[in-house]
Image (tube, rainbow, N blue to C red; front, side, top):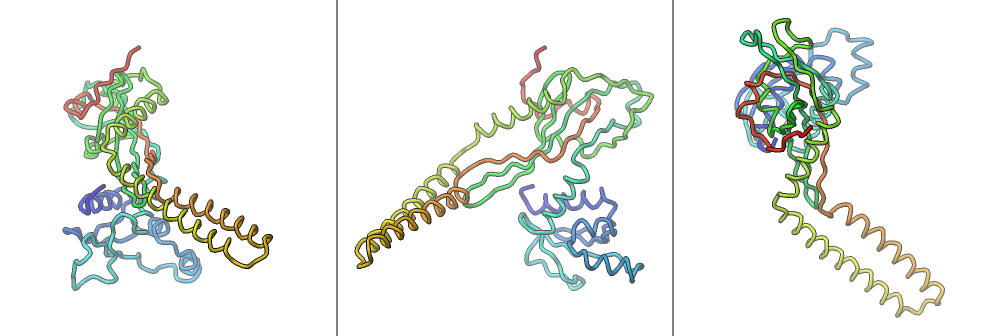
Length: 294
C-alpha cells in the first residue's frame, strides 16, 4: 500500500472479509457499518461496551465515514475520519488483519478445475519498513512453489480474486509438497534480502550523512558546556561531578539519536497462507528464477 487508492482498496477488502456492510463506496470515500465484534477491535472504548452490554443492549451499530482525500467535502458526512499511513484507525485495521488472518490454508475452488492437479504454494505477506529520521512502509507479498522452489513476487494480487475452501474438492488431485514450510520460508527470506541489497540505497546514505551532522552538533554542544564548566569558579570536585554528568547526558543523547535517525530496514512477516492452486494461476506470474535443487 503506497497510494491512497491502495489504502481504500485495503479497507474495502477488510470490511468485506469481516462482514461489515459497506453502505457507500465512492472514490476517496467509504461509509461502513461496524458489527459489534469489529467495533471492539477497531475502536478502543471498553467502558462504552461495558455499559452497552449491561444496560443498553440493543443500540444500533456504529457507522463510520472514512475519507481518503484530506480536503474531501460531503454534506452527508458526520465526523469523517481521514485514513492514511500512520492514522490510528488504519493501524488498528492492520493489527486486526494480522490477528484474524495470520495463518490460513485453502484449496482453490472453481467449476473449471475438474480433474485438475492442485500444487502447494506458501504465500507470505510482509511489511517492509525503510527507517531513518522518516519512515517509509510498504506491504509486499511473495509465494514460493513447494514443488519447484520458484519464488513469485506480488503474489497476493495474483490470488486475491480466487475462491478457496478449507477442504479440497473430490474432483481434483492434490500434490504433496517437496519443500517443507521452513524451506519455503527460507527461500522467500533469501529473496527479500537479495532484493533489499539490490535497492537504491541513496535514502540510507542521506540518512547516515544527516546522522553524522546531528552527532557532530551534539558533541560540539556538550564540548562547549565542558569548556564553560572548566572556566567557572566552582571547586574542582563540583567541576568533576558536572563533567561526569555532561558525559553521561551526551551518551544518552547519542544513543537516542542513533535509535531515532540511524538508517535500517525492518521486515515484519504478518500473514502466512498455504494455498493449493492450479498451475494455470502460476503461469505468467512474476517469477524469481531461483529453482529448488533436490
